[in-house]
Length: 584
Image (tube, rainbow, N blue to C red; front, side, top):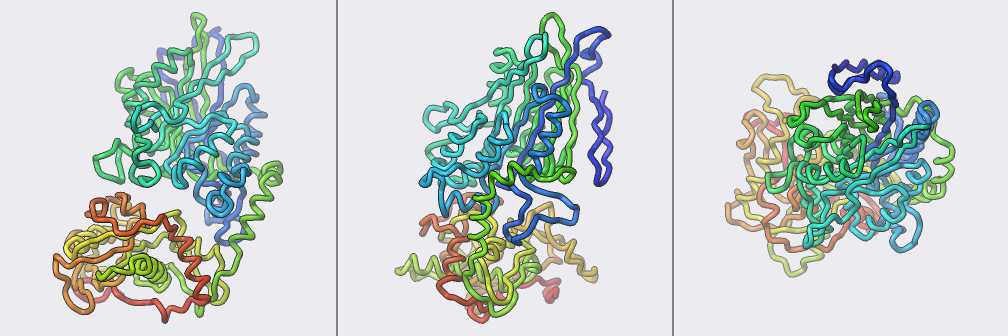
């Protein structure tokens, strides 16, 4: 039996009990106990309810709050209600990257050299996490920093399918079994298996190639779940940093990226999957295991500490063993509580240090530059990224005789360089990812293919249809960060044409580009390693890769120049058209 979850706007969601199967229901007089497993995911180094890019408390239209200080108060509340000895707290990854707070203690004053405790370790230890699983972003700052954070964590950090390249042995703890003592009864054992995302091999190739590989989530779970059961686990929860759709953002060379539902369907012995990666809120979903016919519970707690998943397992004692006879889940909004003052106080020194860093003035802008229209118009603020990338590559390749082009994507629609003082946080708000800069060699034909792939981002617009910019972009759920714009050449994107036939007027210095003409192209590591599935780039010759962080290059360039003036870098080299006529 499965009953639906009722969602009440602005209120705590109601939990409905979903029984595993009619045959497993508890009979009258049998001893039953309910244990609760709470879960977070995709915290992305949000500790306090603070937006470092705006230098203000976090706020969105939905009234959400973010951060572990919010989570902590809700966790305390549930522990008090259910009994701390009947609760556990897990996380499904993407923990140590995502805010300037994380960047500061990875790059400005790295914990690997200072010996300071990472803010996420400090907060998670204080809250009392029982297990944490690796997300793909855990690998962004390299294996040494990751290893330092793992050592600092009191909770085991899990990643069963992250194995050493040569031996195939787990590089991190695969699972842990937590024992919950029940008064006067046999203890309940909850096993948790951690699985991370195979896409790490692409997205952080520079950090893991030749050292780690990432095996299939389903095959890994099939290997380890029987081990966990064999060690006496009464409940088995998989914490997976993978969405539930069974799809991948990359090609078929790696195991499936979003395999959480596949684990539930194909691996016997799993009671529930706490998953993440997609930043969605899934309060309660059931998947039927194809082997056993039993229902497997899935839940995803959104992102940034905005939600807490709460899974309740009803266990019944039969023949001396505990059996799961019911399970349900919901997601709770952390805006229903206030920040935990203990966490706020504990993290205040590191928070204040980060606030000071992001408010440093790096340059003055001659006028306000906004990224609001960047997804569908050529804007000066993205041209600034192109200018810095181009100049960095030119300086690094003094003997180069080929034209240098640059690729950039609209990472943020809310980014603004204000007129006057531009601070670190303004630049960081424009370039929100920790990407590094490379340069590759491409031909004219390859660049045309690349631009056609990028132009799939736009929905087709028939002649005469009104232009609604809210419906123009993100075709096929393509995120803004997978729409690349190219500087150094000129071209049009005809949105009246079907995808694959949209690029027109592709020229260099006013002349059509020959198919075999060669260019140097500045590109970020995410894209060059295969992120977004763009053609040609993964096999293109690499001419430059000094591991320069693009965000830091933007900051240093602004500091050196002292001023940001569109007259120095703005160039309208691409536009949207419809049947050859400008759309705007």
